[in-house]
Amino acid sequence: MSQQLGTLEELPQDYRDDMAKAGVAPLWPMMRNVLPHGAPRPVTKPGYWNYGALRPLLLRAGELTPVEKAERRVLVLSDPGRGVGAMQATSSIYLGMQLLLPGETAPAHVHTPSAVRIVVEGTGGFTVVDGEKLPMTEGDLVLTPGGEWHDHGHEGTEPVVWLDALDLPLFVYLEGSYATEGPLQAQRNRPDASQVEYLASGLAPSRKLGAGARRYPMMRYPWDRTRAALDQLARYTEGGVAELDYVNPETGADVLPTMGFTAKRLAAGATHRPPLRSSSAAYHVIAGRGVSVVNGERIEWGPKDTFTAPVFADITHHAAEDAYLIRVHDRPLQDKLGYYEERAR
Image: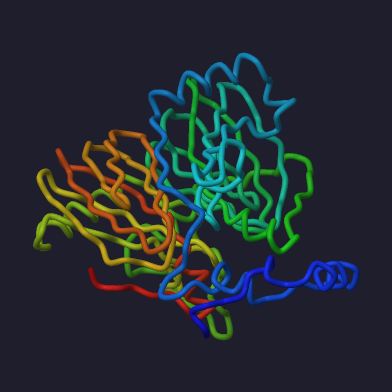
């Protein structure tokens, strides 16, 4: 493509008027915006949300708005590149911080986007997905895949907060985002699959002839097991960095079609410089403190904080103490589209 593209202003006004009447526009003045050379030019900017600042706002929301009026009492984490109110934390990832108070019930619904809940604080909360009651304890990853009925409840005595991560921007862009409401689900009289069928890594229920693998066999990934696995892996990993992907225990595939999740442990004093990735990402800090530099922007983070990185971001993590983070990313979507890429630093 030519390095010198014509501008719209170089075209005669009568020609521009005729194009407008015909409902067309010239491509060449816009070519570099939609097909920049070498790498994308993301609108997304690095974002950071301090939980200490968010928590009082969430609790005030609990005082001001009953869950019956809100349906889902959530504060949206908006990408700084798009401005406050944007329903995107990155180009393809929506993030929201949700509050449920003791005794409250968030009504049942089903929607086209998929969601994951990363539990931030509190005990006694639960999510019911397709009749399966999933306890929610700090650090747990709870799936509510698109097309699956789900509702939330709270049997404890203190507020429960979790981080919602959805592929909502994708469905909004496709004009395929919608929800259907329904009555609360009847709960099965048994523990969830993470406590029964998939209690140990590498083991799954015996396969019956002709039975295919379930698309979403396990909806809850308990943090205590994830942390124990990271600690064990770290004993045999050089550089002070251990990472584990959350996967479907039947197939080994990502837990959702368009979003992936990776748990990371950084030992105290460790520095990690991941490759430049074509996927965007959101990081939620489960425990520990450190600093990340994202495209030159310094982010000091601590427990329960959240920060984001755009595509091909130059990222350096440094842990001041043993730290545990969960990375939300859109690599599964890019893998399906056939263009996921990593570049050496």
